[in-house]
Amino acid sequence: MTINSDQQRSTATQAEPVAHTPPVASKRRGEPLVLQGLSKRFGDREVLRNTQLRVEPGQFIAIVGRSGCGKSTLLRLVAGLETASAGHIRINDQLLNGLSDDTRIMFQDARLLPWKRVVDNVALGLPPERREDALKVLAQVGLADRANDWPARLSGGQRQRVSLARALVHNPRLLLLDEPLGALDALTRIEMHRLIEDLWRASGFTALLVTHDVQEAVALADRVILIEDGRIALDEVINLPRPRSHGDAAFAALEKRILDRVLQKPAAPERESFTHSADGEPRWPGVPAHGVRWAV
Ligand SMILES: Nc1ncnc2c1ncn2[C@@H]1O[C@H](COP(=O)(O)OP(=O)(O)OP(=O)(O)O)[C@@H](O)[C@H]1O
Image (cartoon, rainbow, N blue to C red; front, side, top):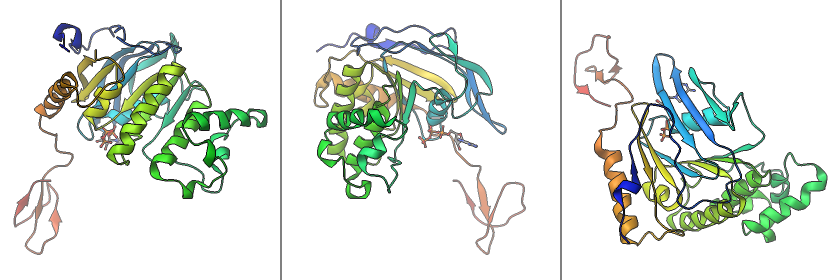
C-alpha cells in the first residue's frame, strides 16, 4: 500500500484548532472536543503552553512524547481532574467544568476494589437494576466466566479487561486511556489492541490514548499527536486500513517516521546537574561543593 504523504501528514499549529476527518471512524457517537489556548503550570514550570486541539466525534487520538512532556497532564485536564492555568476545554460547545458523567478514564493499573467480585467492580456506581449490564459488558471483554471471581485471581491483562468493562458499562462518549496497557506483555497488548478497537468501533466513543509505544499509537489511532516543549509538535493522520497489521510495510514505515520524529529532540533534563562532595554527599546547584560533577 502506498502512503500518500499529503494525506498522512498534517502540520501542527498553535492557531485555531483544525478539524480532521477520521479516515475510518467508529459510529461517531460523541461530540467534538476542543482545547483552546490550554496551558498548565506547576509552580514556575509550564508543562503545556497554549495548546490547540480539535477532536472530532468518534475519533481515536493517540498522544505520544518523551517522558514528562505533559501527556498525562493533558489527559487529566480533559478528565477534569486538573484545572488549566489558562485556556479552556469545550465538549459539544459546552465549557468543561470539572468531571463529566460522559467521560471515563482508564489507568495503567486497573484500580479494582479487591474486596468486591469482578462483576461488582464493573457494576460500581450503577443502580441495582443495571447489574445485568455489567454482566453483558464483561461478556464483551471476554470475561463472562470470571464474573464471580475475585480481582486477585485474575492476570494483569484480565484486570485491565475488567477496568475497560467498568468504564464502558457507563456508555461514555469520551474514553481517556492513560497508558492502560503499559504493564502488559507484548502478546496481551496486541490482544488488547484488538479488543479496544472492536469496542471502539461498536460503541462509537471518542478515545484519547496516552502511550509511550509508537507502534500502539499507529495500530489504534486515527491521529497521532506528539507533545514536545509543552506544545503539539506533530499531528499525524493515520490513513491505514483497519484492522492494522504490525508486519505491514506501510505500518512499519509510518511507525519509524513517527518514532524518528519523537527521538529527534533530546530529552529535556528533568533536574539540574548536581555535584558530589568528597564524602559522596550530593550537593545541589548554589550549594558550594568540591568533587565530581554529575549530570542526571
Ligand atoms: N501535580 C503535579 N505537581 C507538580 N508537577 C507535576 C504534577 N503533575 C505533573 N507534574 C510535572 O509535569 C510534567 C509532566 O508530567 P506528566 O505526568 O504529564 O508527563 P508525561 O508525559 O505523562 O510523563 P510520563 O510519560 O513519564 O508518564 C512532569 O515534569 C511532572 O513532574
